[in-house]
Image 1: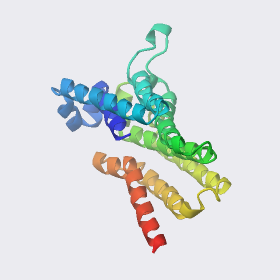
Image 2: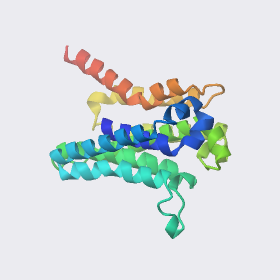
Image 3: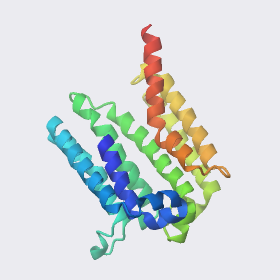
Image 4: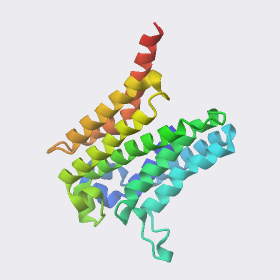
Amino acid sequence: MFLVIYSVYSLNRLTDQEEDAVNMPERSLFVQGNERFLLALAVVSYVVALFLGWLESPFAAVILLFPLVAGLLYSKNILSTVGIPRLKDIFLVKSLVVASSWTICAAFLPALYLHGNFTKIWFVFPFFFIKMFINTVLFDVRDVEGDALNNIKTIPVVIGIPRTRQLLLIIQSLLATWLVFFLDLFSKYQIILIISMIYGYMYILYFCGKNNNKTLSRDILVDGEWIIMSMWVWIYVGIDSC
């Protein structure tokens, strides 16, 4: 998954240079002049990821293709011949497609090891989808100025940041309801899931606030949430086994 994530986001850096010139000029400057090198690394990374996935299972390789297909439809005017613009320019569709593509990988790759018991997927898929949708919109909050200038109709551009914050808090609250339904399924890790939900509320409030538009902290605290949660799981399991 690391190679897939690296590849897709590298390709996105190449296709979003106009928006990045406004939202993150330092990143745009880095990309300029290095396009061929970054493209080569992205392509090689994805090929290696698909090869490794195929060695595990053809099903895994197919699942790993979803982010690539979604990324191309998201960034390029591939469907313009049939009157459909790039998905990034369609209100709501952009956030839904990005969240869905990563959720499919996160939920269905582990299904290879469930041996036909897919009950947990009914929890994992909505959980990851809500998390990824919120994360996607939070980065749209950061990019609201550049997106508005380029006429990209993201949720923050259309309804404003204050209403976006309210919407994300409501969506985040759906996780609490979902956890109640599947309380026994992850009983050992309930405390981690609760921490994850509280953490979600905290970064929604923080990054939808005024003057909290720091790119590095958003990358670490939002995109890096899974690393932080993994550390909590590691600590919790270690304490529990003592």
